[in-house]
Image (tube, rainbow, N blue to C red; front, side, top):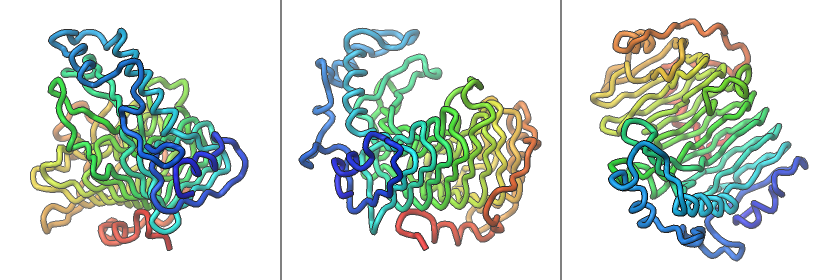
Length: 372
């Protein structure tokens, strides 16, 4: 598949017919059926414009107590639906999508929804930007802009393998977005999110770079959908200049091993391992390279969980590498303490490498174009 039209046709609205889809060159989701580029203005409907939206929902006008509503919010939602229909194709069961050569899927959100047996390999996913982020003044103390699209969204699906892919925002990084109402105008959501009762997924040998909210496993604190599911393995990935969610977990048993985290100073880093409600992260032999001013106590963040197991962690600061108990570092500076007992020990996994090999082996072999 060499363009959006061919890729969407091959996916056939997410049907379950067994298929292998080969992607070549750059597939740009923001193009029409003739290949002509589309802009945000092409998706806008019902009179939506960003300046009008900003004027209507400025906290000085609208306040901070309720979410936006009314004609301009309705127009924003309708415009977002127009973009969604164009850039978010469904991936059905029994589908393999593999890149040939230097394959790029740009400006699209592949949606693996209620599917089984899906493989996605050897593709660079780039800049799945949202033209119509929503302002929510009630999100946090200062409000936040929220966007819709991941590069890959896995919802209600089983037996998923994402391997040797690369993820980035291209020339449109989160860090370059303007501030509106004093908050970053965030046009990207996750790079690879696994939610809504998905199960039995593996994320291996990928490269995630220069992004904020990267990998969410479990979408809400409601156990009805996710409890007993979200069994996920995350191994031999590079997380380079990732600010948070690497991953953030609710409910799932998630084995996180042999990943390499490069966290430079001055990046706006928040955390790597998010310990959410009833999460059971088993982190093993990961390696963190921390820039000046980034502490080992920042690696774990408590999002309402009670436990995380972390063993064999190496931390490099400058030229010094040492073994660090990142759970103890977290507990020394945060309350309440997290337990190290997650109630399970992984048994189904590939070889767990010594953490000292991770910063050499993983950056060399992870990402698109590095299949062997």
